[in-house]
Image (cartoon, rainbow, N blue to C red; front, side, top):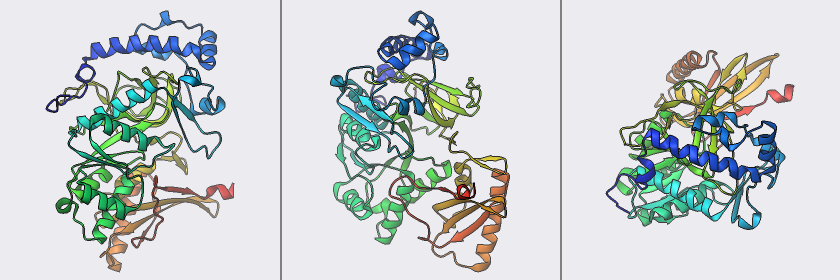
Length: 437
């Protein structure tokens, strides 16, 4: 391990586009053959008259069938396993609040490769074995906790498995242990900063923090910049999903010009969510991923429902793995209001432009007099209490939201602490229209 090298795995991180294509073709063919052990895929391959000879490039993945979250639920719990359960050492699953949970199995090699991916990401943003990594994420079935835990350990850092919540304890650990890096969801970091202010802790002077890994919930560039300005810490966007392994699938480098998706592990497609045809680079579409380095449960053309776009395939950092934009929302989280398609991230982008506003907001959809209505409530920072100024601010926010989402919602500025605070993923949208249906 050369601590001076910008690459943890230079043999993979510095591959040329031609070398990436060759490696992906080899691994896609191997994955195709391996998936014949899964009755779900074996049946589809037979129905589509597919054989390994049909795969001669990464683009040939388009010949293969899609996989959806519903497929995982329909085959619950172990119907998509590609190896016997005796070869699996761990599983993770979703909460299953809307039906059967989605269960993902791992062999020991899967866990080792997952740790390597996360370690690669953390190394890429400058972390080294002498750093102290605090993981303020949920453990257990949620992959964020154990994924970052094993990745940080693989890199060689002292790790602090603080888990989610308990902000006073988090701050004590940060100060006492000399924490230099934290993994947390963006909305929680905003709350952590508020508690620091209440306790008289200045993160710039009283801590050694230098790197944040943020993800697990959609957030805007404005939200990221606000976090960086609060703490004086660089915040790097992280992307992961349990169906692919967990965190580690994509991560920003120091250039912060998009998420590098590791193409030695995944084949990336961006498709039109309606036609399922590829969209040109630069256009927003649905992210589709094929895992090409998994034993227990490889997934072919998994429809993530996340919306993003390709930014490029080269980078000044020297890595040629595809760069994707931050997730713009989800095709199944889209709000349709009066015929207009809206994503919560669009609203957040506008709210975060106003320094008078806090980071906690709530979008409520309701039906009044047979007309659908949107109300945006957002907390104002302390000291913003001039009535005339608040009226003017509400008017300007409503105007800018109207320009962004093509309709003008009701805007209500509320005092700090008025809206619910969640230790997990922030609840941003409440749809009350259902009670009228």
